[in-house]
Image 1 (cartoon, rainbow, N blue to C red):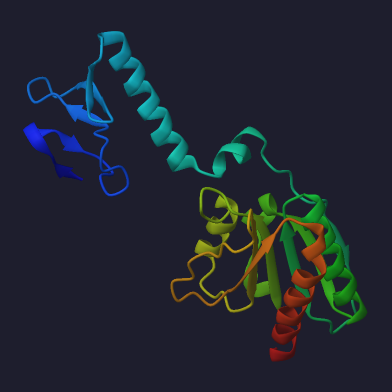
Image 2: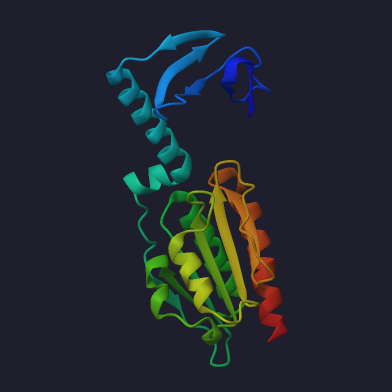
Amino acid sequence: MWTGPRGRKRVFSRFLPSCDIVRLNPVGGGLDRLWIIGREVKLPMKNRILLLYLLCCLLICTQLGCAVPRLLWPQKDIAPSQVTGTAAAQRVLVASRNSEFKNALVDRLKSALQSDGASIEIVGISRLEAVHAKDYSAVVLVGTCIAWGLDPDIQAFLDRQPQQENMIVVTTSGDGTWLPEKKDRGFDAVAAASTMVTVDIVANDVITRIRARLHRN
C-alpha cells in the first residue's frame, strides 16, 4: 500500500494500478469515499454502514476459511470397533471422523493389520480425550483440514502427548496436499484428498508407516 496523489491511499496498487479502492477520511477517520477507476464517489451514511458490514463479513470469512462448512455441517465420528489379535500382539489405535473416504481407508487399515495378527481398536476422534498414546504401538489419526489447520480435537490430543513418534496423522483437504506444521514433533503426516480413487494409495502409504512402527517395538 502506498500514498498516491492528493493523499489518497492506494490499495493493491501492484495489481490494480488505476484503481483507488478506499480512502480514509482524514478528519473523521471513517470510510467516506469509494475510489473506482480513479473516480471518487461520496458514500451516504447508510452506504458507509453497508460497506463496513461487507468488510467485516469478508474478514470473518477469510479467518474461518474452510471451517465454514464444518461449522454448518459438523462431521460425525466413525463407528467404534475392535479386533483382538494374538496374546502377544501389538496394539494399534485408529481414530477417525466419519465419511465415505475415511470409512474406506479405515476398513483397509483394519483388514491389513488383522492379517498381520495385530490388535486394532477403532474409535471416533471425540473419544481421544481418554486415550494415552503410550499404550499403543501405533496411533493413526484421520481428520480433515479445518481453517488451514488440524481438526481441533486432533490438535488437542497431540498437545497432550509428550511422545509422538508412534503417531501418524492423516489429513484430508480439497486438493489433497495440505500438511500440518510439525515444529520438530515426531509424528508422521500424510496428506490426502477425499476421493475414492485415491483411497488405496493412501491406505498402502499408511499401512507401510504402521508396520514400520510395529517392527520398531
